Image (cartoon, rainbow, N blue to C red; front, side):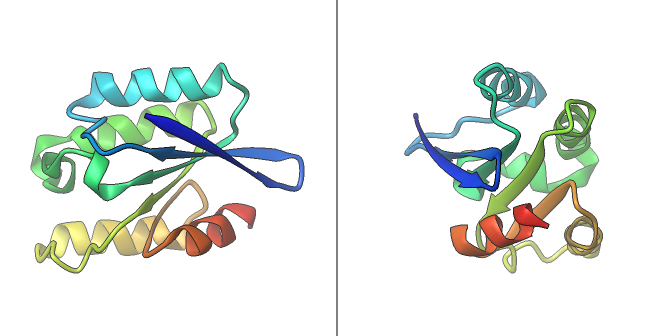
Length: 119
């Protein structure tokens, strides 16, 4: 795992880069969050490919558990990927609602992630 640092004003943004799946369950999400939080990052960019596909099945509640932890720590999160492959109405609505708020964004690329995280 590599962490690339971006700066938005005074905020430090961690772009988490890995060829392996980093988040397989909510505990993995908490450990990644804690690691970044204690390195003084305020915002995180992670790639969809590094998150278990079960995250995108809302019935598993993994997404809710992980995103709640990021919210509790006030760590904003952008997830980069192609989300069109998720056809369920519930996940599409979840992505849409998330993108209207400021805490979590589902975006297509890092430039979009950085833009979302600066507002």
